Length: 82
Image (tube, rainbow, N blue to C red; front, side):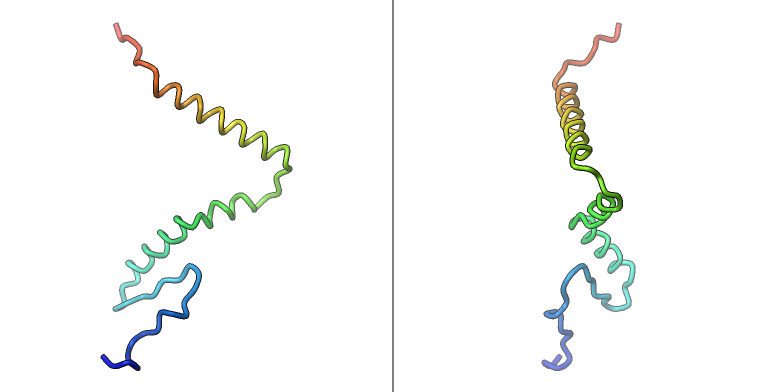
C-alpha cells in the first residue's frame, strides 16, 4: 500500500465513523457508542424545552434526595422474613 492509497483519517472531526469493508453494522455500533458516551442525546432532551432556573434547582434537589435515599436503603440490613 503506497502513500496515495492510504485513507486519510486526519481531517474527520465530530461524531463520525468510517465504514470499512462494507461493514455498516459495525460502523453503526461504533457511532451509537460515540453518541452515547458524548451525552449528545441527553443534552438534546434537556434543551428540547426551556426549564426555568427555579424548576431546574428543584429537580436537581429532588434527584439528590432520591440518590441519598437509595444510598441509605442499600446500607440497611434486609428485613427478617419470618
